[in-house]
Amino acid sequence: MRKYLLHILLAGMFFSMPGFLGAVAATEFPEMELSEEIGTVQVSVSGTNVRALNASGAVLEVYSITGVRVFSQKIESNDKTVSLSSLGKGCYIVKVGKLARKISIF
Image (cartoon, rainbow, N blue to C red; front, top):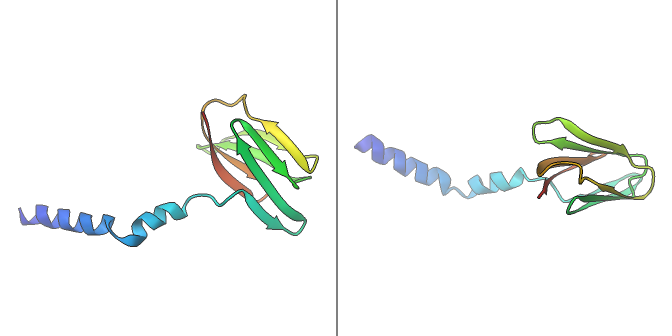
């Protein structure tokens, strides 16, 4: 009985630590904006469309959550919109240059 109560007490202390939930939030990807030497790369996601601004010459890659690349396209202009409607519903990782973010397609 003492071991059972001790386990409950320790579990409660562990989950109530202020840094515990903060550590989970820290694993989220940063906003889709990154300042680089060539300018500011901006990527926005709306539904199944991904829009890249100031990313001329970069490669837009989409990975499944298992790490398999499912889409790749070189960005030829400063303002490019790419439709990802051919991908199935689920979570993906969009990468433009050094910038990466998790997205969901419903």
